[in-house]
Image (cartoon, rainbow, N blue to C red; front, side):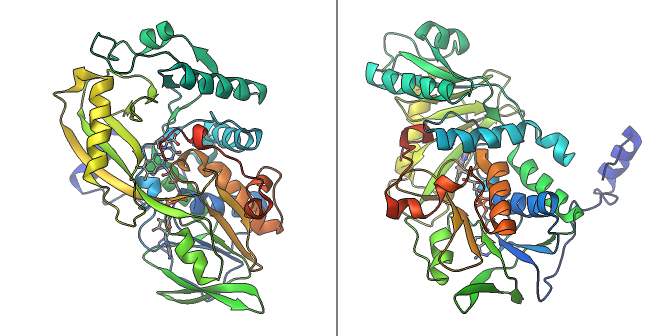
Amino acid sequence: MTRSFSALTLFKEGVTGHAGWAPLWRRAQPKPSYDAVVVGGGGHGLATAYYLAKNHGITNVAVIEKGFIGGGNTGRNTTIVRSNYFYPESVALYDFALRLYEGLSKELNFNIMLSQRGMLIVAHTPAQMEIANRIANAMQINGVDAELWTPEQVRRKIPILNDGPDARYLPHGGVWQGRAGVARHDAVAWGYARGASNLGVDIIENCEVADFIIENGACAGVETSKGRIQAPTVGVAVAGHSSVLAGKAGVSLPIQSYALQAFVSEPLKPCFDTVLLYLGTGTYLSQSDKGELVIGGGLDRIPSYRQRGNPALQETIISGLLEMIPALGQTRLMRQWAGIVDVVPDSSPIIGPTLVRGLYLNCGWGTGGFKAIPAGGWLLAHLMAKGEHHPISRPFDLDRFAAGRLIDEAAGAGIAH
Ligand code: FAD
Ligand code: PYC
């Protein structure tokens, strides 16, 4: 649905508290049964519902969200999108997502504010440069844009980097991906929610899934805080809580959950036109369209479900920022928050069926699932509609842990684990 606004309409909306604005999606109440249920109204769950309807014509679908749409990690992340991973399986997955992102504003008729401003991973030692070199080579072999940069290219791109005699980590070079960048996280959730709702999907907020209905070894629906809902196919995309919920169906996952923190500064004039990850400090940085610096670093050290983050790591991340760019020393921080991420031993996601027939998983994205939302939704929808893997999701099946076919992306994940 497209609406056009004149200046007068905008003024009227401003003074009437947006009284004329239509909600982006229908506020649905649950029906007793659906053809498919998706648990979790984050980006992955909403994209799954959208592609079930759009790609497979399955529209009698409910998305069940315990809080509000996008209130989980989708609304808490630092919005980086990229496909600079190491293994062919991962590049196929993350570059598929990036290509879908490149067309997503048009697909959803909703501006997701994709800004492909490029991402630079800076290395400081010959050993880090060796890894950077291998990632760049692997990406090029897999057909994805990647450049290996010299220290001079790094300095030219980011002149405010600490390069003086007191610098602890001098740039030794880096990997540049020009198609990487940022996208507005809320818009991704809202765009998919509106698209799915327009195709007939019920989006049910403030409704918690407490258990699964299991009959003869197959999933037959969910028990929720708003009653029982039957469905022959259930997809679960509840980052941070995946192992707890899967445990209710008797499915044990190789996942540990940690808090991952982020910060924004007061708005500054445009001073930083790329995305930077500094391997020396583990701190990363970009500047939002409002001018705020968006800052983050490694995982908290101890598994936890506290969505706050611990002060020791806050100090590490911020001291890393000041080491990288001492000129930011007078900048005030406005907010700090954390999200709970589900970390898998090989730092790759789990997408696939479970031993319970009709129950499918999309989880284990750890610190890096925002960039994968379009692909995660597309692939889970494929599984739920056809009962079998899309070739891109096959390597990410849960069976890789029994088979020892791990896809170790600890380096590609970029964030210290
Ligand atoms: P979520 O958005 O968390 O959605 C899951 C939903 O499930 C939640 O809304 C939750 O309320 C709901 N839910 C949970 N349990 C139940 C239940 N029992 N019943 C019903 N609903 C339930 N990734 C990147 O690619 N780039 C980044 O720059 C990046 N930065 C990050 C920075 C931070 C600080 C954090 C925390 C994460 C970051 N990530 C990043 C990771 C990324 O945010 C996540 O991998 C991604 O958002 C996961 O999406 P999702 O839809 O699976 O999960
Ligand atoms: O996956 O690119 C990423 C990322 C950056 C910060 C957190 N995750």
